[in-house]
Image (cartoon, rainbow, N blue to C red; front, side):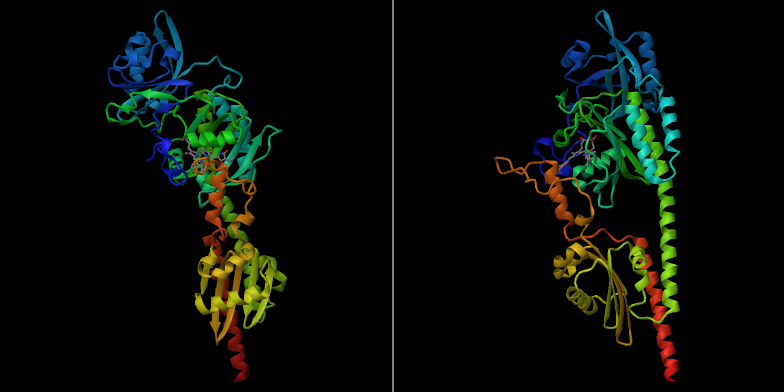
Length: 517
Ligand code: BLA
């Protein structure tokens, strides 16, 4: 793993974001050795919160700051297996003559007890309702949705109402780990991000892995000064303290720069996890610093978890609906094939259905030497060359590819219409019967979030600046001359149409033979 100071674009996904050695300054972090609660490490901002410098706390027991009732409460909680269920613990520390109230969030990791304390706030309008009431009302509202897009919209709306953030987005990952904002609820004057597409590198692999394990993170003030933990290493492991499950973990400086470029002041982000996979995120942005207490964060996390289950259900339903639609189209096309003589005008009335069957933008019907074009296709001359190439070099019954230029270089000239293709072929009596579906380059089909005309900033020392713009440039490279991948259901639909075509062709030959005899 690479420490933040050595991160560049080539090793961005290896930045060790779980061991920054730093926390955000809106709370303090202590690591304790059980059972005597000896303080092993402390964040350097303890003086500000407790009036005692971090160095003076180390090797002392936390117990001296707790009255017997509080100490018993903490010990009782530490005796249970799942200590997290007690979070947040309301703890009052006795320091000199005064007491200080904290919301204390505890978990065990790396062999130590990690205790994070945030100032207990006087309840504001957002936290006046209990966890239970907030969550219940939101879930009831979201469940009213009659379809999946509506559900995502209601989720964004509820989360915004509960958190008071300026913008709440539901961000869904694509199979290539790039992502789309599929729902948004925002302050009216803000520019919308709905429908925009972002490259996978904006949320690198290790971050996605961490968000799969830990459902929630908060940045209360983008312009914060990170606070070091001393000593940096966990004395029990002699390695940097693992903050994967910490609530105060300091965020990657690259991501901070990203948010600064977006003009964001605070962010809150909850995972959506389905089928053991990070499906998406609920991303909240505020345009000035914003703190929400642990309870509100937990409501968001719970909504994320409930939604994750609902997403699986709804997606299954949508998938079944889609399968049903394809089936109907398929039946229709099969009937045409079986009721008519095979010729390349056969689908003339059903061009759209033929495209919809596999979600393509263009199609070529090549029966014998006749070509019929449907939808968006290159000019005939380019098509003839493509068909020749297919017949000479690619005689598979079903062939699909999402980067045609990799195997057929002249495709780079027609990438706007044919970056990828799906083809079914039948070869009978020296005659080809082919249907070839085409898809355009993905870059033409997505609504990406970047201005391609803006130059990439280059630093004085020649290093390329790490910015969202630059990551977009990188993403464009990864999708160059590629179409969206063909889904299995689409390939299967094509295969089934090939069976029907085969049947129709054979029937045609059989009757011709019978007539001849
Ligand atoms: C993290 N990047 C993130 C997160 C989001 C995004 C949502 C999760 C953390 C959070 O905000 O709380 C990206 N934010 C977006 C996107 C939208 C948005 C796409 O609002 C769309 C509207 N980021 C880069 C590049 C690198 C990078 C080039 O653009 C690396 C070279 C890194 N992003 C990066 C890292 C994290 C991150 C390291 C993890 C931050 C952390 O948790 O420490």
